[in-house]
Amino acid sequence: MTPAKRKITVLPGDGIGPEVVDSALAIISATGVAVEFEKYEAGARAFQKGIVTGIPREAIQSIERSHVVLKGPLETPIGHGNRSANVTLRTLFETYGNIRPVRELPGVQTAFTGRQLDIVIVRENIEDLYAGIEYMQTPGVAESLKLISREGCEKIVKLAFAFAIAEGRKAVHCATKSNILKLTEGLLQHTFEELAPQYPSITSKHILIDNAAHQLAMRPEQFDVIVTTNMNGDILSDLTSGLTGGLGFAPSANIGNDVSIFEAVHGSAPDIAGKNKANPTALILSAAMMLRHIGEGKAANDVEQAVLVTLESGIRTSDMMGKVKAAGTTEFTQAVISNLGKASKLSPPKKYAEVELPPSQLGVNVVRAGARKVTGLDVYIESDLEPKALASDLETITSSSSLKLEMISNRGAMVFPSSDRKVSLVDHYRCRFVQRDTTTKLADPEILSLLGTIGGKHRWMHIEKLQEFDGQPAYSKSQV
Ligand code: NAP
Image (tube, rainbow, N blue to C red; front, side, top):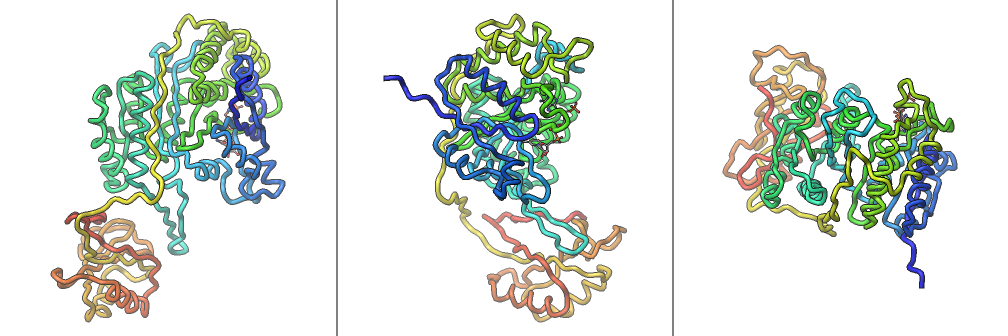
């Protein structure tokens, strides 16, 4: 009996998507692997048909069966849907890790040519500011919640080390902004430093994200794998794409517990869509990552080698043409197909092993504290009063409360009780109240009573409890 073919869901997407996806599919088929493609429309055309997510139900059902997606770029047309179809896919299938490898490619001239760059960004893919939880707190002040979980940090750190081991890499850097964002970015740093000793064969080092950007521009060859939070990874991975030839060459894998999605980093490039001009390399290399993911390591190596041989032979798409006559998407594809089975002169196939993905944890993941207590409350107040006048009024109206005003800050800078510094103010204050008697337990009725008192005179729009976990403050101090 002929073995069943492995199903792959294909979303050609928008703009140049169908052209580059067709190129990758033709090359996969030419390798002879036993796969079957299930193609679905998604993105702009789906939105136009009134599918609010941009992803038709049949496509979602296909992904649930296949667990693997090869996709082109998806556009989110303005006025047809609020949420990006890409973000919907990532969240629906919880593809928590985005792996973006870049390397020096033959004939792709950059400022770093000859330095053999080979860097992988492992980006957390679903948390951070990209959860997109935003509010206008006042008509003039916007807020975005940066949520980082211990669970999310563990998964991305384990994925980065597992990927480094599978690829025989030497070092993992963790890039964060933990010097400023001590609790959120700091959580990734601490998780990384706690887990790194479990991988003694890999050198591990924390680096601040701004220094990482500087070092990538100055001495990028020092980096191997970099693990980072969602927004930092978004920016850093475009930077590394730029170091090695641009978006046309940057593949990616979105790894989840159950479903993984493979796509180029670039978008739909509508300016060159339908003109047979798009460079399909990024999507072809994404397809090679997919083949490796489904256990077709030889086919993956064959595809990568054929791309290298094609570039070595001087065949160029228009984005990298220089003075040479450019090949169209289809000619480039044909050249790669004809080079399947040939070995690159410059870069032999790498030895890859299967990536041991961190086990998935179902249910609610809980981090417990031995001891915890609430010690106060930050109340966010919209007011056009000067800080001293606001403080005086709050002190008066809360004089009989069990909580007392400790400080007021404006955009993070303390403006009360310290008033020496001149800061430009907006009508958005954080007013910190703490217990008068720290030996007693602060309970919700006292907090609600305080809010009632304040709300009788001032417009408050947001509160945060001040908590201590195991004796440690679980909130940031204000800048003095
Ligand atoms: P883009 O589509 O990546 O294109 C930017 C420019 O890069 C293009 O105009 C083109 O420049 C060049 N380019 C990109 N890919 C190329 C390729 N394969 N071959 C040759 N040149 C290539 O970025 P964008 O214009 O910001 O975004 C366009 C749409 O794509 C937006 O709707 C966006 O939301 C969507 N998008 C989707 C994804 C995704 O699905 N994952 C990712 C990013 C953007 P030239 O001017 O040199 O031709």
